[in-house]
Image (cartoon, rainbow, N blue to C red; front, side, top):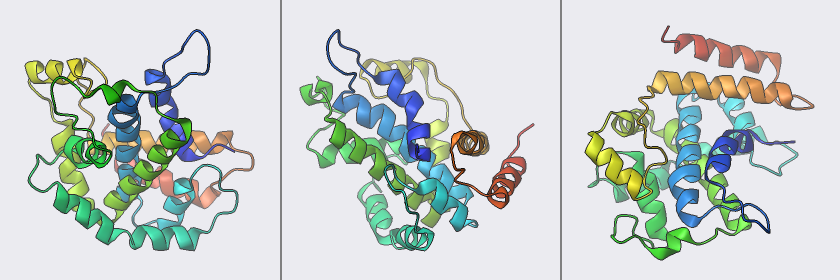
Length: 232
């Protein structure tokens, strides 16, 4: 049974996976944090933000890979109890521009001794990421994103707006050349559009699960939130 995290991460993993002639596909340390972790962190934040009034539904979507028995109360308790951890992370990045690049990518890579902003780039960014390490990074990034959106919705909205605003082309191209952003094309994704995208993905994911992870009442909750954030 694939977790929702696995479903969310799959497009980003396919985008950056290296496929050697011999051996299994892999991702580099740089793409793990700059693309995959960055994406699931933001997606987790969207979930925590838009489902903070429906914590039981959030708990079912937050279940990490490899967990068969779901303890919703424990998951909810852990999310609520993470506020101090998230507050410390916000404090650590308070002097930086309020974007997910600084709050997530710069801070996380600094935690393993890599300065993503140095030039020339640290050679360790091109090293192969161990599969177990990559799995841990994705799980932790997803959970920390949920924790942020759930416990600090106002802060999350500010970070989303600053992250997704259109940048000058010269700045964006420089970031792209250095591997900080995954695409040469800027895409303006509003928070409402992101909520719709992530929750519609949850509905699609649930249909592929046997047995289904979400009950009909859960789906109605998701559809109500999607409708409330529709920009059409």
